[in-house]
View 1 (tube, rainbow, N blue to C red):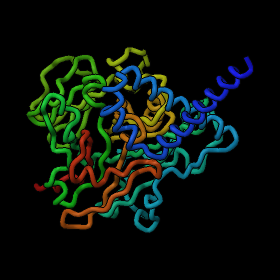
View 2: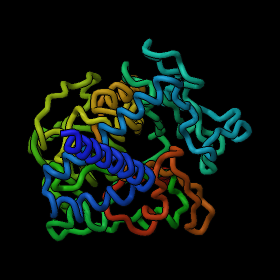
View 3: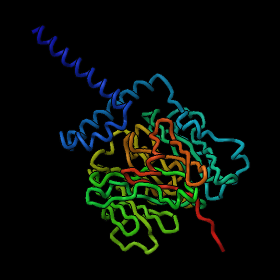
View 4: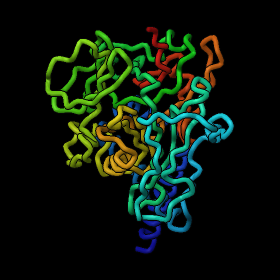
Length: 381
């Protein structure tokens, strides 16, 4: 009996050690599990088996964070060091009346971290005397001090938005492949400002995407839909099957509204219709989202250890009146800022220290869809 007990204990110990080593390996090599999940695991063990492994990983990550941050405050230094605001470059820069960079009212859950909720302009050489991008971060989860949501607000009076389908996703399974790179015209005009991740793959909910005359994935009714117009502006609608206006250049769906008409929507678990095949509304992981303010500015939100409700709370606190979730998981969420070097060349840096740098891929070819932000063309009278 004692020998059997020892064997069982040894097996449990080995399994625990293997699980811990696997967790460390995945954490330090985010690209491998992200790509292997679809190419290897799902064909081998099926959708549910892959989801179970993903759930275990997210659960372990959250539990480790809980233990770690029960003894210390989270690090507020989340942004890339090269994004530290240059006081000389932004000193005296004008702020549009539509930008609204008033400090965000913070929750009472935790003591404020340094600069939490304070919008800080990000310098951009294309706009030497104007504020067109600003960043901050907040905590919105009453049980998780480490669940920091980083926010970037974009002045859409000065900027346009576009979207590109990836070289394979979301339309590849149906034989519809996108360019996967920022248009050459935008690159060569030296007007590129930023780019960030799009939504789920088609099989993770079959959320619609149209760019120009190509329907990569058909639109679905009763879903939040981000419309991008030919003049580079954007708007959310609840798509009901109505004909799209002739001046719409692109549409991207990615599930239900997080926020609609200024109110956070109910987070009802409805499987693939709402949250996608690879996640649920109770799984804590890296998540991203996009919202629009009453003045038409865009807000991108991203952070680790989030669920849709805490992502939505951050977007609402930042001023979004309509918002949706975008892609999730550490390897897929990315926001890149570009600096023009002239002649269509750029340097680029990720928004966060712990974020993948997709700058090169967005310029030359990426397999998933994404959005890009660029300077409005000069208006001629």
